[in-house]
Amino acid sequence: MTPIKVHVPEEGYHGGLISCQVACPVHTDARGYVRAIAAGKFEEAYLIARGPNPFASICGRICGAPCEAACRRGQVPRVDDDGHFVAQDRPIAIRALKRFACETAGPEAIPSAEVLRRLQSYVPAVAARAEEMAATLRAGISGSVPKVNGERVAIIGAGPAGLSAAHDLALLGFQPVVFETEPVAAGMLAVGVPAYRMPRQVIEREIDVIRALGVEIRCGVSVGKDISFAELRRSFAAIIIAVGAKSSRGLGLPGERGPRVYGGVDLLRAVSLGSSMDIGREVVVVGGGNVAYDVARTVLRQIAYDTARTAARLPGTSNVRLVSLESLEEMPADTLEILEGDEEGIERLNGWGPVEIQRSAEGQVTGVLFRRCLRVYDENRRFSPVFSDTETQVVRCDTVLLAVGQSPMLDFLDDGGVDVEMARPGWPKIDPKTLASTAEGVFVAGDLAHGTRLLIDAVASGKAAARSVYRYVSGREIRPEVTTAHLVLDQYRRERGYESIRRQAVPVREPEERLHHPDVLVEIGYTPDLAMREASRCLDCGVTPVFDGSRCVLCGGCVDVCPTLCLKIVPLRHLIGDEALLAAIGNSLGLDADLDQNSAIVKDEDRCIRCALCAMRCPVDAISMERVTFSTSWRCQ
Ligand SMILES: Cc1cc2nc3c(=O)[nH]c(=O)nc-3n(C[C@H](O)[C@H](O)[C@H](O)COP(=O)(O)OP(=O)(O)OC[C@H]3O[C@@H](n4cnc5c(N)ncnc54)[C@H](O)[C@@H]3O)c2cc1C
Image (tube, rainbow, N blue to C red; front, side, top):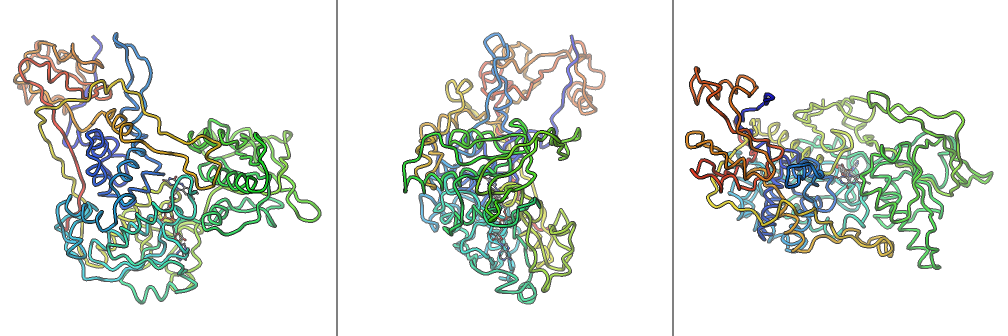
């Protein structure tokens, strides 16, 4: 028999199996809300989802969903009756389920005061800013953290990082004041992400809940113009800079400066705020990421809408070309964006790099000269494009939109912030643990702290900055404390046939319908029936069979009944492992155990679908199903 390498579970092991929760930067118990939806407990699902994440409703629409990437259902092989591999299964549609929970029981459906009341009564009460807000909203702040005395903290930028920091600071007893240059709050979510993905009313409702905590958001106030950084340092106990990276990067191409060449995020901002921009009818978007798709799909909708109002649009006419350095396989954009972009009529040109923007004698854009990109990354996956000297093409157009990355704008530091040192031009030097800058009392959060990432990373970073401000202002140390709970489940049963249900497609609108108006939502979302069916696919990784070796009679019933063949009974001699294995054998059998006469039940964690058939089959009750949950709270030391 081939030796089997085993890992003996150590403390915290089972919590680590809840891969969706581990992968989420704020450790949302996705498994918890998905299972609540499956049970028809929609309000509870919302409360679980909202607990650690003040942007739950927004995440339900657009989160990059690292939880889904980590979902174990996506790694479980589907096997036939003989145990042969059929196909890889697909992850649970966690983001779409979060949207369903939020739409049903979150601020989209219920007034913000009522949302707060429900959150308050759902979670254990802890110290917070005001009596009526004596719940943490499960912000990860435990009752043992004494609140401060209303010290004022200035936050620059009302994006997800700044507002998440403000949310947690309010719960900790601070008076946060958020300064936002735009007329609306929410940062890139409101002035970047297009309305066909992110409805603006949902943003407003979600931010209303944060405001209801006592967070003051001053929109239309630019730090550096309307108020100086020096003034903020004089008037506030601490400052968090969360200004994101909202300047479109240029490429420095010949012809780039002049009319009708714009940064992609500038176009998105103009459309979001309803300001006009001089855009032609033949547009080239340079870039291959999600932002490039937001830009291309937005401009396509604008053209379609304008054209529909003036004349009949010719079917099949493509006005928008997206040109990327990368091949289709290498493009950084999500597959769904590429597919939906293709469906809507965006013409994709892969493997071309821009050389020059061509203009007429009058200065009008006439086209872009591209050369063939032979390779984008080197052998170490570093960005190092190589181009052909001979293969070129000119793509005719009258407008060029560059979606090749963003960078921060920190000019306001000139007055009062020269001690904020830079790690590289435009990006401040920070302590990665505390998010402190080199200047006293000045912290950094969000994209500015970690580079452009996902919305949920910005939320996590804002919350971390809030804790650092607490330490700085109060002088008290707070540390994370992970609480793990084990619960034996007497009557654990799964939904009938859950193991063979395929991922339920999230209903979307037809491509033609999407182009009727720029704000028409692409995703329609789940109905209650579909949501419950999809949620019932969750493997509930926190539940695990636990074997009592002192009762087991090695009958093999559990092995026989296991539908995914994840259990084996193996003589101890055939196990290989580290010292923990030797210790486990020694503890249960003594050091002189006969390794040939004794056996162990070995479980393949990747295959186990938590069906509980082993526990039901066991004739001597040696197997119990146990639920493990973990949560992180913050305590004063
Ligand atoms: C087009 C686009 C689409 C995206 N789509 C997704 C997505 O689908 N899913 C996802 O997970 N992530 C997405 N992201 C990433 C996500 O939006 C960002 O990671 C997130 O918004 C960063 O948050 P932040 O708070 O650090 O910065 P921002 O959201 O950029 O907010 C910073 C705020 O600071 C303000 N500000 C700047 N300077 C000043 C000043 N001097 N005074 C006052 N205010 C100032 C800005 O106006 C802005 O509102 C997208 C990003 C873009 C650009």
